[in-house]
Amino acid sequence: MSRNFTIKVPATSANIGPGFDVVGLSLSLHLTLTATVPAASEQAYITPAITYSGEGADEVPLDAYKNLTTRVALYVLRCNGIRSFPSELKIHAHNEIPFGRGLGSSGAAVIAGVLLGNELGQLKLPNERLLDFALMVERHPDNVTAALIGGFVGSYLRELDEADTAAASVPLSEVLPEYPEDAGEDWGLNPPPPPSGIGHYVRFGWSEPIRAIAIIPRFELSTAKAREVLPLQYSRKDLVFNLQRLAVLTTALAQNPPDPDLIYEAMKDRIHQPYRKTLIPGLPEVTRICLSGAGPTILALATGNFEGIAEDARRIFKTQGIEVDWKVLTVAGGSEVTEH
Ligand SMILES: Nc1ncnc2c1ncn2[C@@H]1O[C@H](COP(=O)(O)OP(=O)(O)OP(=O)(O)O)[C@@H](O)[C@H]1O
Ligand SMILES: N[C@@H](CCO)C(=O)O
Image (cartoon, rainbow, N blue to C red):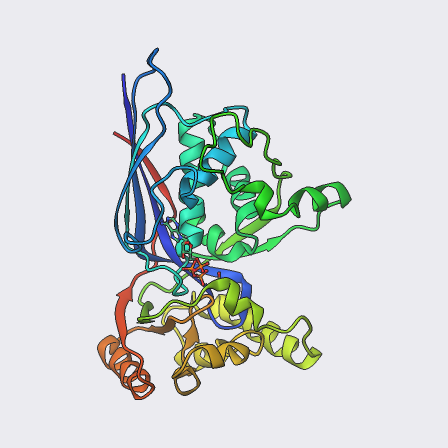
């Protein structure tokens, strides 16, 4: 008998001001995979057929050895002794998360891949282990952890011993190799497995009336590029500035009713936003609100006047010649896998 299942993974906004590489918030836009695994057959192996709709449809590779989600799934399978996808696997992906805008599209694709590998191999891995696989691909924990667990989540990378540090630091090109055109089933069979327990996390409370207004410029900014502009060292003053605010923010965002003045001050940042300003025209004028992930999307947390806030930001961006779209998002639950 064939198996059918759906994997639904939320968008995420990382950092939320001062929590650079530490906090993430899952949001109500989703990447949804629908998979069909035919019953085993004696026929020759047939590679997966991928179809795709929604955001990124014109650029995402549909070859299972090139697509980020299926490459991650193959990594999970191979680390667990399963050499290939099931023959004649069919996957449809529908994506609502815009690429390269700071809404965790790559984190969602990676978590979808980890969950796909877990389902295809019927591995029943616990969340902690799923996260290990995701962290071998996306090495800051904020987006992937919030995408998997859901809600407002804080995470850190555990201090590993020497051997595990080396295992967790292998180049991404070994974890997810570039499969050559003629890659057969036997190519790249033994990828480096993740050490156990790379990341730890905790879910904070979230004040129900707070919504996230995502103001999304119509241009992409890759996370890699937005990380290149950051310094390697910070002053004690700037670190303390962020630590003080982050400590307050994680509780302030759970209080009911929320205190807007406290939250406004606690969302200020000196670790990443000041350095990324030059990459996002219009941002200096709108930093009353925070950068979502690596940008260029900005996020305003509010309990009302959503349209007024978004239209103000739109006007500011327009003076810089930047068109934006905006959405009022709620905090989403974590990733879900449903068998049909
Ligand atoms: N559903 C998907 N399927 C395949 N590849 C994807 C998918 N979503 C994202 N990607 C890949 O991830 C890239 C975007 O990743 P990037 O880390 O630059 O931005 P982001 O994840 O959208 O933003 P941020 O990390 O700041 O929240 C895309 O250009 C694409 O290569
Ligand atoms: N913490 C990450 C999130 C983006 O993936 C950054 O700001 O670069």
